[in-house]
Length: 132
Image 1 (cartoon, one colour):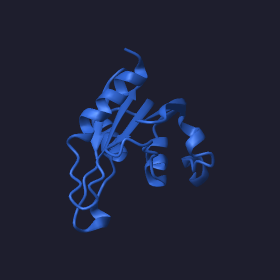
Image 2 (image 1 turned 90 degrees about the horizontal axis):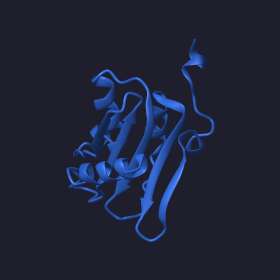
Image 3 (image 1 turned 180 degrees about the vertical axis):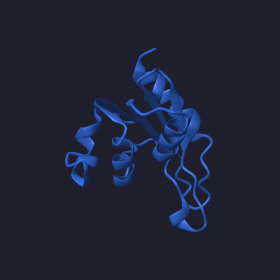
Image 4 (image 1 turned 180 degrees about the horizontal axis):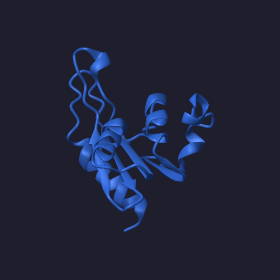
């Protein structure tokens, strides 16, 4: 099984755990760390919309809270079967820990797979170097 297949499959598993009673838009994400661990997450909505969290950040928070600091790749899937591009906040948040050559994996039931360098999805990434 390829890295991409592993992460897409894990993201689909986590998508099934999503709590999205308001949007009915379930999302799953899986992150591969540099030491080979995989962390997954789902979106969790709340009646106070600002309290919701996206699947990508759920996975990243789990990884970082377990000591991971370097991500190799992330896969994201959604219940509509279309490409689930991460939102801007998630791109910034995950990018803080993503290796410079890290990958983003997406899947569309009609269009097929999409694999791209993560930082191609956020070309003007704000880095910590700018605030030092």
